[in-house]
Amino acid sequence: MNEFLNYNLKLLLLLCISLFTSIVNASVCFEKSPNFVNLNDEYFNIENGHLLTDIEKRTLSTFFEKIDDRWEGDVFITECTGSDEEPVEENLAATLDTSVTFESNGYLSILADMVNKKEKISGQKTLNLLGNVNAFYADFTGSSSIVYSERYLRRNAGGGGAQHIENIYHIIYSGDSLTINFSYYISGVLTAREEWSLERI
Image 1 (spheres, rainbow, N blue to C red):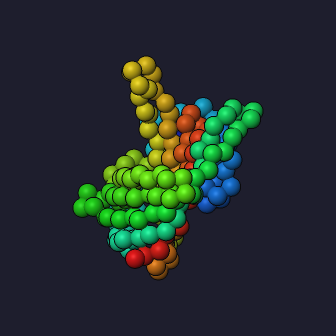
Image 2: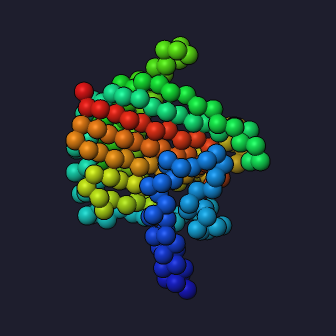
């Protein structure tokens, strides 16, 4: 019985492949994650995931080594507010000075300085991607593009319950150009997205 359920789960995950590339560019606020659409309540079973195979780990390492460098460019951020019935998009554009480092533990470490001179806003963002994370879905078949999803539970402030978090990443590398798209989901619905367009320094 368990083997039958696991087989069906893998089939459902495969149905998401064609959706991942477009989801980061075409998502609208509070839209359901493609995984949530396909898996329904099984989506919230945090124990279901995808352990990277040795081949996928080697592919990932090769890809990360290519983008280990300094990059600069722009970011367009959308945060979702309002309600499901009347969503509101709050947008912010900023410039980026970004350092991408492939760490010895397998993580891709991203440190980005963000500046919006018009709004007089500045800040720093740090990301540690993948490594030995138990990815929910991963597609490393292309040599210049990687799409993956990670899920985890985030404890609420004060210790009362937890939120189900899913992040979908699409990283596209081409010579001296790098695009990183992020889609953030809470309880299965889109709450924010970012589009990074970078050039090698």
